[in-house]
Each structure stands twice: as structure tokens, then as C-alpha cells.
Length: 287
Image (cartoon, rainbow, N blue to C red; front, side, top):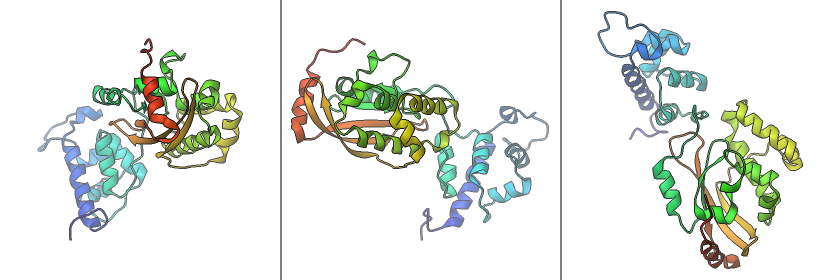
């Protein structure tokens, strides 16, 4: 029988222990604020040093590396990930080995859309596409999105926000034929993704602002509706070409927590492909 996620828990604990040892071995004491000391026969941190920094017992941590039948909590795994300087992929791997959903963290610095992703978005010339951040700020968009649901470049502020536009911008609100269903669905999906960021000042500022600006948001947010609407359809009433119908998909992308790609695809209803083509023939907007 192969060592699959569900088939062999012992093998996965053994793999997790080996992974922890490998990450421990690549760190110098100076990288975590410890003195180098003498008589280090092997590179990296000692087990007792990792245990101390993570706030767990040395014996217990040793058992973890040995693959014994113990179950670390999410908080302990997060502490170990911090101590061992795990990147997002390594963190996800560690949580997965213990059958735990990885706890996303807010990116420590300003979110950045890399060139490969930006080129891909620009290359979707006939599919409106957006890159959203952890707070659903619009980080990047292509020309089709600018013409269909923008214009983002003309908005005041450093970055437009999907929920801000949906709940507090009258023109954007009029764009959606069944606005209430769209807004409720977006809010429920946003709420489902928001658990890791509860208490973050920027997250709380967004919620407070929308509560102040939108009676609907103020009424719906306390209902705690949660959904994962990562695909579906949207019906728009564009001021230049009239009614349009799109399928949409939202996909996780990049190595930054919470970053996602939102893509619209024209469907045959309402003569949407022709109308989108007509929009795309408009002169380029100034940046």
C-alpha cells in the first residue's frame, strides 16, 4: 500500500519529522538571534533551541522529529513555521503532513504582482481579468476588465477594492443586473476567506468603512453568511453596449497568501461575445 495522505499516517509523521530536521539543519543560530557558541558538530539549530524558540518542551519536540504519534496544534505548527523561517509553500507542506489546513497569514509587506502573472493577465485579451489581494484590493487588471467593469485607473486612492466598489460606488452598483445576489454572494465568499485576518487593522478598517458607507453591508455583515462561490455567472448592464452575460472563475495564484485571479468569460446569451468585441475596439484609455 502506498504512503498516501489517508493511507499511512505513520509514514506522513515520519516525513514531517524529516522535514522539520531538514529545515532546522539549514538555519544558523545567528539567523534566529542566538549566539553561535562552540562545539557544534553539525550545522543548523539544535533541537532544544527550536523547542525553546517555539515555546514547547525539548522532549516533546524530539518526539515530533522522531515521528511519534502526537498531534501538534495549529498554534504549535505556526510557531514552528515562524522559528524555522518557512516560506508559504513550506508552511503549507508542514500543515498538510499533519492533516491540517494551513493558516494563511497576511503578507508581511505590500502585495506585489510578479511579471509572469502580469503578462498572463495582459495576455487574456478577450477575457476581462483581475488580480485581487488578501483584502480584495485590485492589484492588477487587463484592458478588457478596464473597459467592462472599470475604469480602475481613474479611481481615487492607491488601490481600488472590489467590495468598496460593489457596495459604495453607484455606477459600479448599477452595472450588475441582480446586484443584491451578486453583493450577497461576494460578501459571503469574502467572509469565508477572512478568518485568518480578523483583527488585522487594515481588514477591520475596510469593514468599518463599508459599515459606515453602505446600509446593506451594515445589515448583512453581522449575519455571518459564508460561501465558497469560486465560479458562477454574472449578468451586467453595460452603459455602452447593454446587457451582457459572463461566466466567472476565481483561482488562487502566486506565492502570496490570499492572492487570486478573477477571470470573466463571455457566454452566448445576450449576444455577449459580439458586444465584448465591440467594447474592445474602443480607443485605449489613458493610463
